Length: 414
Image (cartoon, rainbow, N blue to C red):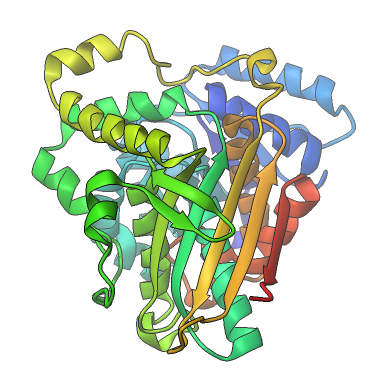
Protein backbone atom coordinates (compact mmCIF):
# COMPACT_ATOMS: atom_id res chain seq x y z
CA UNK A 1 0.00 0.00 0.00
CA UNK A 2 1.47 3.37 -1.02
CA UNK A 3 1.92 6.17 1.51
CA UNK A 4 -0.71 8.27 -0.29
CA UNK A 5 -3.33 5.53 0.02
CA UNK A 6 -2.93 5.03 3.77
CA UNK A 7 -5.98 5.80 5.85
CA UNK A 8 -3.93 7.85 8.31
CA UNK A 9 -0.66 9.75 8.39
CA UNK A 10 -0.24 9.19 12.13
CA UNK A 11 -1.63 6.82 14.75
CA UNK A 12 -1.03 7.57 18.44
CA UNK A 13 -0.97 4.21 20.24
CA UNK A 14 -1.58 4.42 23.98
CA UNK A 15 -3.38 7.75 23.62
CA UNK A 16 -5.34 7.54 26.88
CA UNK A 17 -2.24 7.12 29.06
CA UNK A 18 -0.54 10.09 30.69
CA UNK A 19 2.13 10.79 28.08
CA UNK A 20 -0.18 9.77 25.25
CA UNK A 21 -2.80 12.28 26.33
CA UNK A 22 -0.25 15.10 26.48
CA UNK A 23 0.96 14.18 23.01
CA UNK A 24 -2.62 14.13 21.71
CA UNK A 25 -3.22 17.59 23.15
CA UNK A 26 -0.11 18.94 21.43
CA UNK A 27 -1.15 17.40 18.11
CA UNK A 28 -4.58 18.99 18.47
CA UNK A 29 -3.33 22.47 19.32
CA UNK A 30 -0.11 22.71 17.28
CA UNK A 31 0.09 20.36 14.29
CA UNK A 32 -1.40 21.17 10.85
CA UNK A 33 -5.19 20.98 10.78
CA UNK A 34 -5.20 18.81 7.66
CA UNK A 35 -3.30 16.00 9.42
CA UNK A 36 -5.07 12.64 9.05
CA UNK A 37 -4.59 10.92 12.39
CA UNK A 38 -6.11 8.50 14.87
CA UNK A 39 -5.92 7.64 18.54
CA UNK A 40 -5.50 3.97 19.37
CA UNK A 41 -5.61 1.74 22.42
CA UNK A 42 -7.49 -1.10 24.06
CA UNK A 43 -10.64 0.71 25.24
CA UNK A 44 -13.00 2.24 22.66
CA UNK A 45 -14.96 4.06 25.38
CA UNK A 46 -11.85 5.75 26.82
CA UNK A 47 -10.70 6.71 23.33
CA UNK A 48 -14.12 8.21 22.53
CA UNK A 49 -14.03 10.26 25.72
CA UNK A 50 -10.54 11.51 24.83
CA UNK A 51 -11.65 12.57 21.35
CA UNK A 52 -14.48 14.61 22.85
CA UNK A 53 -12.00 16.37 25.16
CA UNK A 54 -9.68 17.10 22.25
CA UNK A 55 -12.52 18.56 20.22
CA UNK A 56 -13.00 21.22 22.90
CA UNK A 57 -9.35 22.26 22.53
CA UNK A 58 -9.63 22.88 18.79
CA UNK A 59 -13.08 22.28 17.26
CA UNK A 60 -12.02 23.61 13.84
CA UNK A 61 -9.42 20.93 13.06
CA UNK A 62 -9.84 17.45 11.59
CA UNK A 63 -10.78 15.19 14.49
CA UNK A 64 -8.89 11.92 15.01
CA UNK A 65 -10.22 8.53 14.12
CA UNK A 66 -10.54 5.82 16.77
CA UNK A 67 -8.76 2.48 16.44
CA UNK A 68 -8.79 -0.33 18.99
CA UNK A 69 -6.00 -2.89 19.19
CA UNK A 70 -4.53 -5.25 21.73
CA UNK A 71 -0.86 -6.19 21.97
CA UNK A 72 -1.56 -8.97 19.53
CA UNK A 73 0.67 -9.63 16.51
CA UNK A 74 -2.11 -9.69 13.92
CA UNK A 75 -4.06 -6.76 15.40
CA UNK A 76 -0.92 -4.63 15.53
CA UNK A 77 0.01 -5.57 11.97
CA UNK A 78 -3.46 -4.55 10.78
CA UNK A 79 -3.19 -1.27 12.70
CA UNK A 80 0.24 -0.19 11.45
CA UNK A 81 -0.68 -0.98 7.85
CA UNK A 82 -3.31 1.76 8.04
CA UNK A 83 -0.83 4.55 8.77
CA UNK A 84 2.47 6.05 7.69
CA UNK A 85 3.70 6.54 11.28
CA UNK A 86 3.03 5.20 14.77
CA UNK A 87 3.73 7.07 18.00
CA UNK A 88 3.94 4.48 20.77
CA UNK A 89 3.44 5.65 24.37
CA UNK A 90 2.65 2.25 25.90
CA UNK A 91 5.37 1.47 28.42
CA UNK A 92 7.42 0.13 30.02
CA UNK A 93 8.67 -0.63 26.55
CA UNK A 94 10.68 -3.71 27.45
CA UNK A 95 7.39 -5.25 28.59
CA UNK A 96 4.99 -3.96 25.93
CA UNK A 97 6.94 -2.29 23.14
CA UNK A 98 8.53 -5.15 21.19
CA UNK A 99 5.39 -6.27 19.28
CA UNK A 100 4.81 -2.69 18.11
CA UNK A 101 8.42 -2.31 16.95
CA UNK A 102 8.22 -5.64 15.13
CA UNK A 103 4.98 -4.72 13.36
CA UNK A 104 6.33 -1.36 12.22
CA UNK A 105 9.67 -2.76 11.05
CA UNK A 106 8.02 -5.56 9.08
CA UNK A 107 5.47 -3.27 7.43
CA UNK A 108 7.69 -0.28 6.69
CA UNK A 109 5.80 2.01 9.08
CA UNK A 110 7.70 4.87 10.74
CA UNK A 111 7.87 4.67 14.54
CA UNK A 112 8.60 6.92 17.55
CA UNK A 113 8.70 6.27 21.29
CA UNK A 114 10.09 7.84 24.46
CA UNK A 115 11.80 4.92 26.15
CA UNK A 116 14.92 5.38 28.22
CA UNK A 117 15.42 1.62 28.53
CA UNK A 118 18.91 1.02 27.15
CA UNK A 119 18.89 -2.82 27.38
CA UNK A 120 15.65 -2.95 25.40
CA UNK A 121 16.87 -0.46 22.79
CA UNK A 122 20.00 -2.55 22.29
CA UNK A 123 17.80 -5.61 21.75
CA UNK A 124 15.66 -3.75 19.22
CA UNK A 125 18.71 -2.51 17.30
CA UNK A 126 20.07 -6.05 17.05
CA UNK A 127 16.75 -7.61 16.01
CA UNK A 128 15.06 -5.00 13.82
CA UNK A 129 17.48 -2.36 12.50
CA UNK A 130 18.24 -4.16 9.25
CA UNK A 131 14.61 -5.18 8.72
CA UNK A 132 13.43 -1.60 9.25
CA UNK A 133 16.10 -0.23 6.91
CA UNK A 134 15.22 -2.76 4.21
CA UNK A 135 11.53 -1.79 4.46
CA UNK A 136 12.14 1.98 4.65
CA UNK A 137 10.83 2.45 8.20
CA UNK A 138 12.33 5.41 10.11
CA UNK A 139 12.27 4.19 13.72
CA UNK A 140 13.44 6.46 16.53
CA UNK A 141 13.23 5.29 20.13
CA UNK A 142 14.30 7.66 22.93
CA UNK A 143 12.93 10.83 21.31
CA UNK A 144 11.71 12.26 24.63
CA UNK A 145 13.64 13.83 27.51
CA UNK A 146 15.85 10.80 26.99
CA UNK A 147 17.58 11.40 24.62
CA UNK A 148 16.41 14.17 22.26
CA UNK A 149 18.03 17.20 23.99
CA UNK A 150 21.44 15.50 24.29
CA UNK A 151 21.45 14.20 20.73
CA UNK A 152 20.10 17.32 19.02
CA UNK A 153 22.43 19.71 20.83
CA UNK A 154 25.47 17.51 20.14
CA UNK A 155 24.58 17.41 16.44
CA UNK A 156 24.06 21.19 16.32
CA UNK A 157 27.37 22.02 17.99
CA UNK A 158 29.35 19.52 15.92
CA UNK A 159 27.74 21.01 12.80
CA UNK A 160 28.58 24.55 13.91
CA UNK A 161 32.23 23.70 14.63
CA UNK A 162 32.61 21.91 11.30
CA UNK A 163 30.97 24.78 9.37
CA UNK A 164 32.81 27.61 11.13
CA UNK A 165 36.19 26.06 11.93
CA UNK A 166 36.48 23.19 9.40
CA UNK A 167 37.48 20.71 12.11
CA UNK A 168 35.83 17.93 14.06
CA UNK A 169 34.59 18.00 17.64
CA UNK A 170 36.64 16.40 20.40
CA UNK A 171 34.12 16.47 23.25
CA UNK A 172 30.57 17.62 23.93
CA UNK A 173 29.86 18.32 27.61
CA UNK A 174 26.19 18.77 28.52
CA UNK A 175 24.90 19.88 31.90
CA UNK A 176 21.34 19.73 33.13
CA UNK A 177 20.91 23.09 34.85
CA UNK A 178 17.22 22.94 35.69
CA UNK A 179 14.88 19.96 35.67
CA UNK A 180 12.53 17.96 37.88
CA UNK A 181 13.16 14.20 38.12
CA UNK A 182 10.53 12.02 36.48
CA UNK A 183 8.80 9.50 38.72
CA UNK A 184 7.92 7.51 35.62
CA UNK A 185 11.60 7.19 34.77
CA UNK A 186 12.32 5.69 38.19
CA UNK A 187 9.45 3.23 37.75
CA UNK A 188 10.99 2.12 34.47
CA UNK A 189 14.42 1.63 36.05
CA UNK A 190 12.91 -0.58 38.74
CA UNK A 191 11.06 -2.61 36.13
CA UNK A 192 14.17 -3.09 33.97
CA UNK A 193 16.06 -4.59 36.89
CA UNK A 194 13.24 -7.10 37.31
CA UNK A 195 13.51 -8.15 33.64
CA UNK A 196 17.20 -7.94 32.69
CA UNK A 197 20.30 -9.36 34.32
CA UNK A 198 22.84 -6.94 35.74
CA UNK A 199 25.25 -8.17 33.05
CA UNK A 200 22.80 -7.19 30.28
CA UNK A 201 22.18 -3.78 31.83
CA UNK A 202 25.92 -3.16 32.19
CA UNK A 203 26.52 -4.14 28.55
CA UNK A 204 23.85 -1.73 27.29
CA UNK A 205 25.34 1.13 29.32
CA UNK A 206 28.80 0.93 27.75
CA UNK A 207 29.63 4.21 25.98
CA UNK A 208 29.55 2.80 22.42
CA UNK A 209 27.05 -0.04 22.94
CA UNK A 210 24.57 1.33 20.38
CA UNK A 211 27.10 2.54 17.83
CA UNK A 212 27.21 0.42 14.64
CA UNK A 213 31.01 0.86 14.54
CA UNK A 214 33.59 0.84 17.35
CA UNK A 215 34.15 4.17 19.04
CA UNK A 216 37.49 5.93 19.52
CA UNK A 217 39.59 5.32 22.59
CA UNK A 218 39.86 8.26 24.93
CA UNK A 219 43.25 9.93 24.68
CA UNK A 220 42.70 11.82 27.93
CA UNK A 221 41.40 9.80 30.87
CA UNK A 222 39.40 11.53 33.62
CA UNK A 223 41.50 12.44 36.63
CA UNK A 224 41.60 10.15 39.64
CA UNK A 225 39.67 12.69 41.72
CA UNK A 226 36.99 13.00 39.06
CA UNK A 227 36.52 9.25 38.82
CA UNK A 228 36.41 8.91 42.60
CA UNK A 229 34.37 11.98 43.55
CA UNK A 230 32.31 12.38 40.37
CA UNK A 231 32.75 16.15 40.08
CA UNK A 232 34.19 18.30 37.32
CA UNK A 233 34.53 22.04 36.81
CA UNK A 234 33.95 23.29 33.26
CA UNK A 235 34.30 26.91 32.20
CA UNK A 236 30.91 28.47 31.34
CA UNK A 237 29.08 25.50 32.87
CA UNK A 238 30.29 25.61 36.48
CA UNK A 239 30.60 22.72 38.91
CA UNK A 240 29.17 19.48 37.55
CA UNK A 241 28.43 16.04 38.97
CA UNK A 242 27.11 12.65 37.90
CA UNK A 243 23.86 12.64 35.90
CA UNK A 244 21.30 9.91 36.52
CA UNK A 245 20.46 9.73 32.79
CA UNK A 246 23.94 10.49 31.45
CA UNK A 247 24.88 6.96 30.39
CA UNK A 248 21.57 6.42 28.55
CA UNK A 249 21.89 9.67 26.62
CA UNK A 250 25.56 9.08 25.89
CA UNK A 251 24.86 5.80 24.08
CA UNK A 252 22.29 7.53 21.86
CA UNK A 253 24.65 10.38 20.95
CA UNK A 254 27.38 7.89 20.17
CA UNK A 255 24.97 5.89 17.97
CA UNK A 256 24.42 9.04 15.91
CA UNK A 257 28.20 9.38 15.54
CA UNK A 258 28.38 5.81 14.26
CA UNK A 259 25.36 6.03 11.94
CA UNK A 260 26.79 9.13 10.26
CA UNK A 261 30.11 7.48 9.54
CA UNK A 262 32.03 7.69 12.80
CA UNK A 263 35.44 9.28 12.38
CA UNK A 264 34.78 10.11 8.73
CA UNK A 265 31.70 12.19 9.62
CA UNK A 266 31.68 15.86 10.61
CA UNK A 267 31.80 14.75 14.29
CA UNK A 268 35.41 13.66 13.78
CA UNK A 269 37.55 10.66 14.79
CA UNK A 270 38.12 11.62 18.45
CA UNK A 271 34.56 12.61 19.35
CA UNK A 272 32.98 11.64 22.66
CA UNK A 273 30.05 12.85 24.75
CA UNK A 274 29.83 13.50 28.52
CA UNK A 275 26.77 14.49 30.56
CA UNK A 276 26.44 15.90 34.08
CA UNK A 277 24.18 17.83 36.42
CA UNK A 278 25.05 21.37 37.53
CA UNK A 279 25.42 21.83 41.29
CA UNK A 280 26.23 24.83 43.49
CA UNK A 281 29.55 23.54 44.83
CA UNK A 282 31.89 20.57 44.99
CA UNK A 283 30.52 19.33 48.32
CA UNK A 284 27.00 18.98 46.93
CA UNK A 285 28.42 17.40 43.79
CA UNK A 286 30.28 14.72 45.74
CA UNK A 287 27.16 14.01 47.82
CA UNK A 288 25.00 13.63 44.69
CA UNK A 289 27.58 11.38 43.03
CA UNK A 290 27.73 9.01 45.99
CA UNK A 291 23.96 9.08 46.45
CA UNK A 292 23.46 7.94 42.84
CA UNK A 293 26.18 5.30 43.16
CA UNK A 294 24.74 3.89 46.38
CA UNK A 295 21.18 4.05 44.99
CA UNK A 296 22.13 1.95 41.96
CA UNK A 297 23.60 -0.70 44.24
CA UNK A 298 20.65 -0.69 46.62
CA UNK A 299 17.90 -0.90 43.98
CA UNK A 300 19.57 -4.03 42.61
CA UNK A 301 18.05 -5.73 45.69
CA UNK A 302 14.51 -7.06 44.93
CA UNK A 303 13.00 -6.12 48.34
CA UNK A 304 14.17 -2.52 47.91
CA UNK A 305 12.65 -2.34 44.40
CA UNK A 306 9.36 -3.72 45.73
CA UNK A 307 9.24 -0.97 48.36
CA UNK A 308 10.19 1.85 45.98
CA UNK A 309 7.54 0.81 43.46
CA UNK A 310 4.92 1.86 46.03
CA UNK A 311 6.08 5.48 45.84
CA UNK A 312 6.67 6.19 42.14
CA UNK A 313 4.23 6.85 39.32
CA UNK A 314 2.81 3.75 37.72
CA UNK A 315 2.72 3.51 33.90
CA UNK A 316 0.03 5.85 32.58
CA UNK A 317 0.27 8.18 35.56
CA UNK A 318 2.02 11.51 36.13
CA UNK A 319 1.88 14.85 37.95
CA UNK A 320 -1.05 17.25 37.66
CA UNK A 321 -0.93 20.42 35.55
CA UNK A 322 -0.81 22.48 38.73
CA UNK A 323 2.21 20.51 39.96
CA UNK A 324 4.12 21.17 36.73
CA UNK A 325 2.98 24.75 36.10
CA UNK A 326 6.14 26.28 37.58
CA UNK A 327 8.65 23.75 36.27
CA UNK A 328 11.45 24.78 33.96
CA UNK A 329 13.94 22.70 32.01
CA UNK A 330 17.33 24.00 30.89
CA UNK A 331 20.38 22.34 29.38
CA UNK A 332 23.70 24.09 28.79
CA UNK A 333 26.40 22.54 26.66
CA UNK A 334 30.01 23.16 25.67
CA UNK A 335 31.62 21.57 22.61
CA UNK A 336 35.41 21.56 22.26
CA UNK A 337 36.90 21.68 18.77
CA UNK A 338 39.38 18.95 17.87
CA UNK A 339 42.38 21.24 17.58
CA UNK A 340 45.86 20.33 18.82
CA UNK A 341 46.41 23.57 20.69
CA UNK A 342 46.56 24.50 24.36
CA UNK A 343 43.27 26.43 24.07
CA UNK A 344 41.06 24.88 21.38
CA UNK A 345 37.99 26.81 20.22
CA UNK A 346 34.72 26.11 21.97
CA UNK A 347 31.04 26.41 21.12
CA UNK A 348 28.10 26.90 23.50
CA UNK A 349 24.44 25.85 23.36
CA UNK A 350 21.44 26.46 25.57
CA UNK A 351 18.14 24.63 25.28
CA UNK A 352 15.27 25.49 27.62
CA UNK A 353 11.53 25.06 28.02
CA UNK A 354 9.04 26.65 30.40
CA UNK A 355 7.04 23.65 31.56
CA UNK A 356 7.29 20.09 32.83
CA UNK A 357 9.32 17.21 31.43
CA UNK A 358 6.24 15.20 30.50
CA UNK A 359 4.81 18.10 28.49
CA UNK A 360 8.10 18.52 26.66
CA UNK A 361 8.13 14.77 25.96
CA UNK A 362 4.68 15.01 24.38
CA UNK A 363 5.94 17.88 22.24
CA UNK A 364 9.01 15.93 21.12
CA UNK A 365 6.82 13.07 19.96
CA UNK A 366 4.32 15.21 18.06
CA UNK A 367 6.88 17.51 16.44
CA UNK A 368 9.15 14.58 15.60
CA UNK A 369 6.24 12.87 13.88
CA UNK A 370 5.30 15.84 11.72
CA UNK A 371 8.97 16.34 10.83
CA UNK A 372 9.12 12.81 9.44
CA UNK A 373 5.78 13.18 7.66
CA UNK A 374 6.22 16.62 6.11
CA UNK A 375 9.98 17.38 5.91
CA UNK A 376 13.10 15.91 4.32
CA UNK A 377 15.80 14.97 6.83
CA UNK A 378 18.99 12.97 7.30
CA UNK A 379 16.77 10.05 8.32
CA UNK A 380 15.04 10.09 4.94
CA UNK A 381 18.35 10.14 3.11
CA UNK A 382 19.60 7.30 5.31
CA UNK A 383 16.60 5.27 4.17
CA UNK A 384 15.30 3.85 7.43
CA UNK A 385 16.37 1.67 10.34
CA UNK A 386 16.53 2.22 14.08
CA UNK A 387 17.88 5.76 14.13
CA UNK A 388 18.28 8.65 16.59
CA UNK A 389 16.63 12.06 17.21
CA UNK A 390 19.54 13.94 15.64
CA UNK A 391 18.83 12.23 12.33
CA UNK A 392 15.83 14.60 12.03
CA UNK A 393 18.30 17.49 12.16
CA UNK A 394 17.51 21.13 11.60
CA UNK A 395 13.87 20.66 10.45
CA UNK A 396 13.08 19.07 13.83
CA UNK A 397 14.90 21.83 15.74
CA UNK A 398 13.06 24.53 13.78
CA UNK A 399 9.70 22.96 14.61
CA UNK A 400 10.61 22.71 18.32
CA UNK A 401 11.51 26.40 18.34
CA UNK A 402 8.16 27.34 16.84
CA UNK A 403 6.45 25.20 19.49
CA UNK A 404 8.12 27.04 22.38
CA UNK A 405 11.58 25.55 22.95
CA UNK A 406 14.37 28.12 23.32
CA UNK A 407 17.37 26.85 21.38
CA UNK A 408 20.58 28.79 20.74
CA UNK A 409 24.11 27.93 19.62
CA UNK A 410 27.20 30.10 19.16
CA UNK A 411 30.98 30.04 19.02
CA UNK A 412 32.64 31.43 22.13
CA UNK A 413 35.18 34.22 21.84
CA UNK A 414 37.74 32.40 24.00
